Picture 1 (cartoon, rainbow, N blue to C red):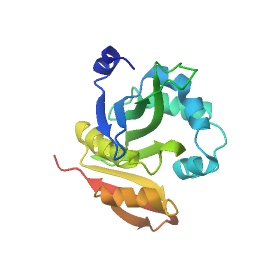
Picture 2: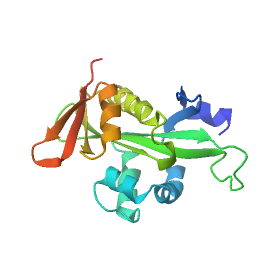
Picture 3: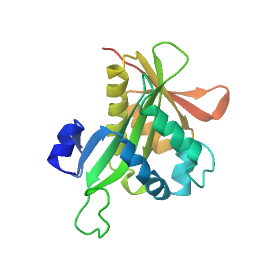
Length: 188
């Protein structure tokens, strides 16, 4: 990803504990053409943890929902990308690899947004989840929400511990014990 594109996207960067630099930028319409590829790189288990159902393929309906988020008022998607090394011979992402994303969308409750985070398997356990949760907080504040909440499967212990470290509150959903409600108040 060249510098001009980074500036156009107002990309911000974060460093992972291992020194890797991750760039955060808004999802672009052009990214949707790579969504299948990103989705295919998720293991069946990761897809299950993110979509809370066995999800063998990314449906046109799901892609349409993601596309709608690009224009929906009060909604935003940030993607996390890393520079591709020169060891890749298929350089169709302008030298970047999409490794995760954070999505914030309105709910029917005033001031409350719902969030979801997704992360490629190869990048789990490297600190990207915490970066994406901080991004959820930043997006929520920027969009004027005072509270963000998301659903995480109870079995997703890694994400739940990342959420606790990011000062999110984790509580069981009494309607469904297999799900935890992960939330955080956003003070300006």
